[in-house]
Length: 420
Image (cartoon, rainbow, N blue to C red; front, side, top):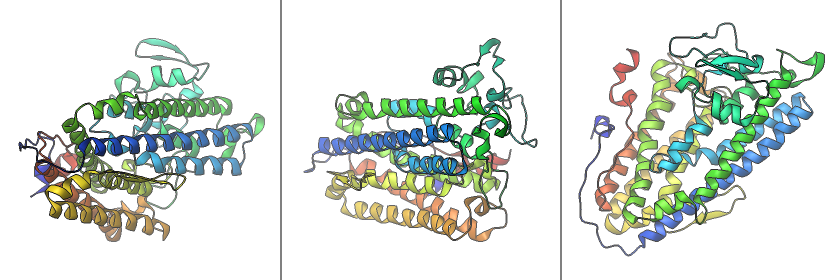
């Protein structure tokens, strides 16, 4: 089977559902319980991030900025493991852009380096700099941004003028406000925003420190609110849980769709292969903080723990229950063993990227043209994700499901188009 067979076109596979001893409803309960736990953990870490950011703003210093950055990095660990819930659950996919949209035109938010591209035909607001501009016109309407609030970010600025790159809120807007631009290209080093960007009075650097603080607080408040809402959707009585439990076949399709779409189109294609093809660190998922190696790892882990029905929580408690793996093992134990092995292989490859970063090669550097070692590391992850998707496809007939749509990737299916 070639990667082209994994394109976005529907895969229609019709089989009679086999009789299974494992209770399908119990598998869906495990899936929903793990979702609830992951979003609760994401909420817990976002609240810890909020505390650290409030401390940075009230007592700006090198130490309080470092603490806020560490809190942001910690918050990414549970959240990235939720991304496997996106593609099979419309309630998650419709919401996800509020909290994890990327890449972003950071000039919309704050000051940027002089080398940064200004307004373009595609985005007239790419260098608006809301923090320095309390009054402006947006899509023909006068906007009063004297007070920077969560509502301003969510209702006015986020995806302003219908442009996806106008990301005004979520993890990556906060990341930019904590690290600033990474101007190192494919060299070592992350963003290096000074703590004095939040200092008051004459110690303030780059102007508008009070408005920058207000923006950072508003974005963090919005993130916490959004995660509170999503955690509630997966709790008992929540809409997302109810949708999964309403129909066993549809619930299983949601699980398989999320696994295959994240593995192939999103992670292997748009998050990993694209940046390598372009040798462009701007295509990093966490480009300001140089945390992309961890985001890739926890995305992969999210796929694995959904299949195995097992999630290790922040407090180290392990949540486990009847799993998709259990169902597959009853009808096709060979396929179950194959997919488990491939998931392990992918995780080894993603961990190798993290190890290389610890040993001194930043993900930025892996993307550099001519870095054969870095390319091999990233491609091992890409190939592992593609290969596991082949086995994820085979879950459809094994479980007697019909018509699964996996997210495609032009980067993988038609790489020449990337350069057109």
